[in-house]
Image (cartoon, rainbow, N blue to C red):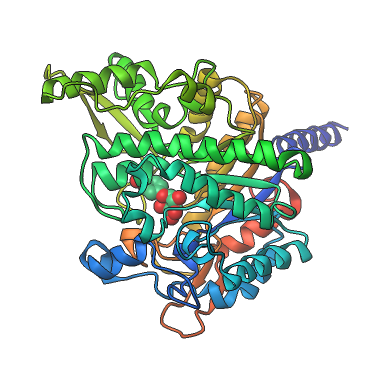
Length: 483
Ligand code: PNW
């Protein structure tokens, strides 16, 4: 009798634990890639040069091992295999990006490439045939070089150029693509380019360039959103937003909280506040920091370009969900040296495990805290994790990647179940090992390994691919673990 009760009790406990590890019914799982990182075919057919083609060819020393994306995973030719992999995993959706200069070789909408159209039509139709939804990013860092030559993201005219490009994309693909990301991680390419000079086109201009790019990116995103609203939404009922790179900042001590919040506004608010906040425009803390700095440097006015009231209204509210790209966190420590600007130092907690990427340490709780912060600042909305994944060296037995996915997904489950966060989907970065920007092919994030020395670019599932497949099939982590 006693032991029967005990068994029943244990079963009940196990069932509850199981349920806790279930994702809500209808939760969507996907995997992601980006054009320059996988396609190759850099000069195939009438594709024109983009800023990454130029950067890796002209300044090869910026990239580890002098690697480049000329061939990458050769997805330009091997897209059928990519779709087969997405189907093997049982993905609900596959996130990929369109190469602007493959579709519009001049950068402008005057000429549309037939081969470019065919390529993306093939990918979209091939996915849909397998019941996989395409999630499409319009811009994942590969600006046509012709537009860079006219100033690229620092030229305000890019708002119209991007709008024209977006209209071409929507007119040809929006009948089948229902979920869109306009621009991927502006922080990475505006700050990465102008504040650090390490991203294509490698122009270092931290005081002015970064903020011109920042403002134009927000306007360009809004332009694409407004075009969709006016010309396509009624017909196609899709969803759009931009995707932000979100590093979670945690105060080193409670005294560091105030400046940590300013750091969050600087790193996240600068690309979110204008779109998602009720009042729109720049975050006040950022206006103050940049104004102070500009004054100290002798500029006649702040180098953070002001928004007009019209621009604020134009950008405000241009989203249907919040796209979360999250990998890692940092500790923020106040450096009280009285100098103007944001006086913080960023550090890593000694308990956080390093990965193959220098910027990347493992802190699973960060993802939940980050999304809670977003909800608190901008209100309750739908969140989709559009990138999350782990960086390792080569190898098929990637148990650390599986561990990473488990721990971060558990935090998302806690966010959904305990905090009531409206998270509806999750995207693993990335489907297969690929060109990891300036890390070349050294940092590998793939569920599939790619043999970059074979002309066939052979793809082989890693242990994490099996894990992800089972997770999707059961819609639950319960088959692996308990909370
Ligand atoms: C993202 N950081 O970039 C990009 O969207 C992907 O193209 C990229 O492959 C992936 O994450 C992994 O790096 C990031 O310094 C670049 O914190 C840098 C950082 C984070 C994300």
